[in-house]
Image 1 (spheres, helix red, strand yellow):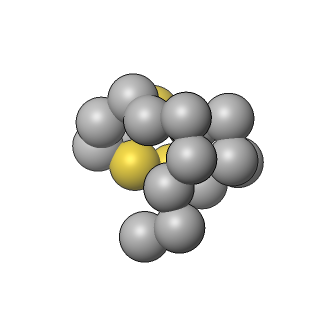
Image 2: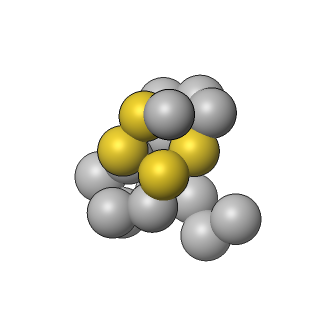
Length: 19
């Protein structure tokens, strides 16, 4: 998993993701 700039771990690299 990739840690996004938002601080959330997501499967894709996104700048802001609240999923």
